[in-house]
Image: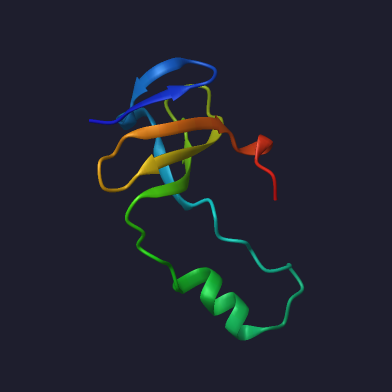
Length: 88
């Protein structure tokens, strides 16, 4: 079981969180008419082995959005911080 260290609530089981996808994908601009850009954003995703940045929301706690850096091969968490602090 993953234990995620929430910056607000402390260490919690991953059952309290909702996985929300890849935090490294850049969303196209809202008014971008490029179909291929939107297609890649919505449907085309890598399946990396190793360090990966992911969005998680603490739904059964403080409800904060977090960016978790996790090794997909070992499930070791390397960092957790608020999503609002993420540089674009």
